[in-house]
Length: 211
Image 1: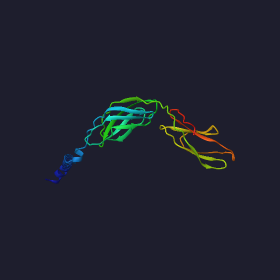
Image 2 (image 1 turned 135 degrees about the vertical axis):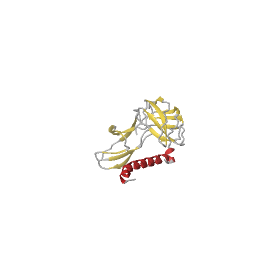
Image 3 (image 1 turned 180 degrees about the vertical axis):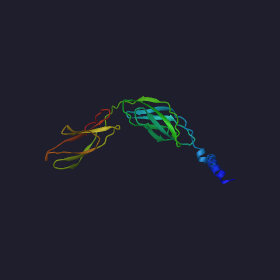
Image 4 (image 1 turned 30 degrees about the vertical axis):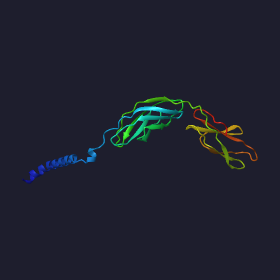
């Protein structure tokens, strides 16, 4: 074979060799790649409400199954945040942004470790009861006192997730709608008596007794 013919054939030989190499790699792919999980979990079924408070709902469902043996669930709601949590749970107390007296629709899906997502469960629609229970009475104490100021602390109260406090001085509000449980008040007049009380108010508009 003369050199001119060899130089003409060389690019074709190189291309053919590269093709053989690619085919070899494809046919010798690792078992891990060949066995990638592409099967989604089964769809959760029989989603149902098992209890309610003004700010939460208790859910139950028939769990999903998957060849991996483990799934995570996502509760989806059209008008509040979604929430994802690990299986194999088949019950959940759900609180993400729920508000008393409002109507919500939920459904649930499952996801396996490979990222495969099931179909959605059935939907459930429910209306949370209104909040008619006032917060418990806060207690208030003096934590620091000076000639022209006083620092107070008041206890958290038992209620739903949203509670605000109003601080009264001599019967008049001096700080309203705060989430804090402490504060400093002044300037005050030395050698003068002051009376401070605190009242809690919840998201439903219910007021606690005065501290």
